[in-house]
Structure formats: C-alpha cells, structure tokens
Length: 109
Length: 113
Image (cartoon, rainbow over all chains, first blue to last red; front, side, top):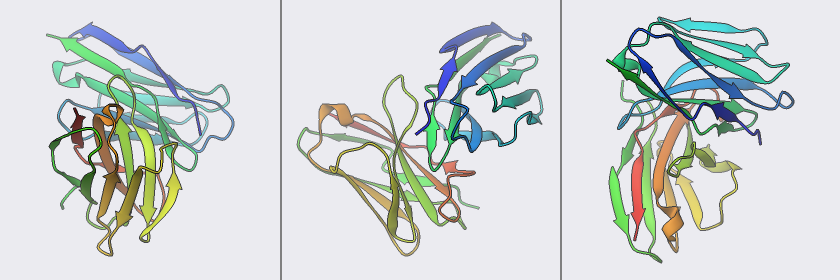
C-alpha cells in the first residue's frame, strides 16, 4: 500500500492568483497517479491520470506534472476563479487507490 | 448516461446496530470499490468487488462486508456499529476489476450515535 501525502492541507488565494500544490508518494511500487477535484456535496471528479515519468496533463487552466523518480506530482491552477474552490485529492494506485488527505482550496473573490 | 448512484444519502444509527449501504455503478462498469472517508482524512479503501467476488480488501475488520449482484450493483454492510464508523462512505465504479479511471458516487453520510 502506498503512503500518499499532500501539501498544503488548505490554501486561500485571491481570484486571479495562480497556485500549485504537491502530492508525494514512494517512488517504488508505483503504477499511476490520479488527481481528483471534489466540490462540497458533489462526487469526486477525475481530473488527470498519469503513469509515465515526465507526464504533463492539462485541462483548461489546470495542469499537472509527474516525477516518478523522486515521487511527486504538482497540480497547477492558473488565474484561480471562485468556482475552482474545492478539495483536490491525489491518489496513487498499485493494486488499489491510496488517497492523500487532500488540499482544500478557497478562492476569494 | 447514469453515473454512480448511492443510497441513502444520509443515515443515523445507534451503536451496536447494523447498516446496509447501496451503490449502482456507472452504466457499462462491472467493478465496484468502497471507501470510507473520516473527517479530515482522505478516502480509505475498504474493498473491491468484481464478478460478484471480493477481489481486494483494505485494512478494515470483518464487521465490514459486502456483496455484488449480477447487475453489478453492490452493498456494503457494517455490523456492530461503533462511534468511529461515523464517516462518509463513497462508492466508485470502474471496468474489468481495475482501479484505473474510477468514477465516484456522491457518498452516504453515516452518523453513529
């Protein structure tokens, strides 16, 4: 079972700011890294799945990178908007998903 | 295209009671995984069902059991409820017994008093 850690635990930014947060995992026994966005009272929504070292994925203003050799992934949000406010979860999968505890992002108008 | 649905939305039980939570997977999916999310933590894997069998299990006691039906829907049963079982229970569906590309339901909030 992977040990997945996320930082920071919470983050407050002003509308228009760019921000990023980190997911770290043991570099051995790695299969895939998943990012989810979870708004209050809704289902977690898959953002990205990455498997290869150096992978970069982008969806609109959100992008993610993966470094499997050193065991981390970054999620970037460019020009944050209030609707980006959510908890961002990452999970590593070997045979099963192991989640970090998430980064709670609040974007202030 | 129906996504993952869970019932009930909320549930209040008393210590020692038993509870059953239900999950219907996304159309076309045949694999169901269950997670427990306690306050301030990420979802913790309970178990996964594929082809009506428990295929993988996380670090949860035998009080937690499940079932998958021929239509791929699933139940999570918890016996002898403890206060610490209060949590959000998430169901996720995927294809072919894999954890890749899981789609989550909105969860069932269980409160044990």
